[in-house]
Length: 246
Image (cartoon, rainbow, N blue to C red):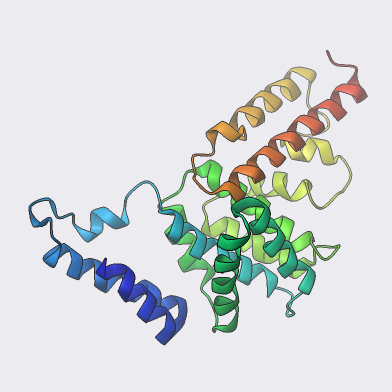
């Protein structure tokens, strides 16, 4: 379609911002000259659809990867390898190589707007998917053995743009940045919480982070959901042992 041609041309001319503008302009042309004029959709309907295509999602996911990798002022080879290995195990070698070529091109471009990327995703993805995005980004930041404060701050900024609550952000952060009362932080409850409150928090977390609730075709995010769900279970089991809960 013309909108995709416009996106490709725009990307090579002006990077990510050019791709977005090219896609937008191409969508307008499509709406006027598409073969199915009788059922042409408004571009505003297209931009407010509840889901995002796999191609759009991958482009924006790679943009967020690039932002996090550059957050501490240096490009870590181990973090880039993490992205490559993750995508190879998820999509297979051929598709992963194609995705990573796009990743390298994005990495070479100028400043990418985290706010623009996140606004796009926030309008088109379910809340559960956005939570798994943050989980994936923390995994990248941790790939070199530690998560720096600039990386934490950048992911926190991204969480805000994705309309993820601060409590949810802290819960995911606790899965990667260990501290006192870590299991309680994962479940988003105080250590002073009653047994009933702990059980309720676990039920809510287990329901919220269950992989079945992550409505996306992206296998990387699905795997992240499974991992996060396991960590919620592990946190609850730790508290169970501490308190002798059944």
